[in-house]
Length: 109
Image (cartoon, rainbow, N blue to C red):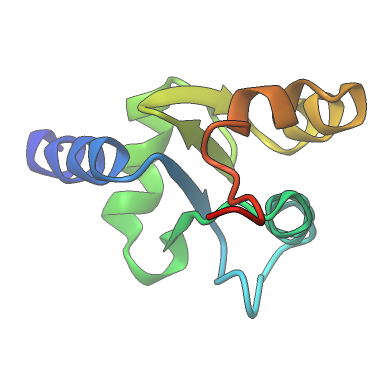
């Protein structure tokens, strides 16, 4: 388990935004993963996605890493933000855009 947690930690630290999800952004394999990836796509921020269905160790390890029992899980700048319900609420309130504002591409880039 320690090795898996190290792998997860490396991925979380390597990317400003990373989504641990079931499936891929192009082919989500659960409604909750689909919802969070759609929100991120709408916001327009680049993000890394890890398909937990490809590795049972990662699938279980991420639950321990974040101390959160469900997937998807979103991390921004190394910080665990939450799962589908929390991301949906943050998006509706505008707080998600605030968390991502310095990472969102602008027309001047």
